Length: 266
Image (spheres, rainbow, N blue to C red):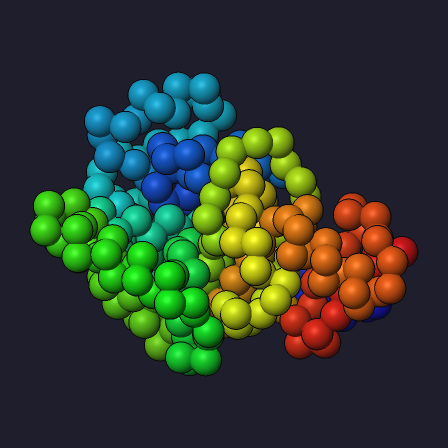
């Protein structure tokens, strides 16, 4: 892999303090752990009832209790942070995701790296390609969510629209279906859902978190909406094998969608 551009783009020294919005969830806890492992000072935001879920990190992070769409809680939590990792949860029917996104956009310091999580159903430019089954599944989930007043998928779309329209240093990471398990390494990504490399539609949740945290220091992902898939998923391995003409070592894979092929790390 040609690392010249990537090495210049990365600036780990710029990240010292990180806020994790939605820290008590599974994805949030993985991000907290990985941020702490990198030596970052970590602030987490979660509902007061969920604070006990962060007991394993007691004494190692600061917790700001409150709904993630509460502007005042977000204002206090992101103060002085160089990066903000935000889980855009579409819970309830109270504009939760868009409220969360707006609070982060309003209160994060100018120039901070803002990394948001969502699903593949989010499209930035309408050029993603979805199967009929995928579209049907999203429609059913949206209908049932509204019916029981539990999930508001359309609000997650609105949240991302606001992020895309902002002039901030954002990244929106679009996750595939998720599973638990040991890390397989940094996921591969494409700008378009429908790319064959994404066909497996499966990523380890710990690796979704890894991609989010890595994005903080990767300026090549600024104002990108990468759709990710596990690096050891069949479609990622198959695509690498077709391009290279052999089966590469998984730990050497890194996908650069603008080039349309895999590179190998030296």
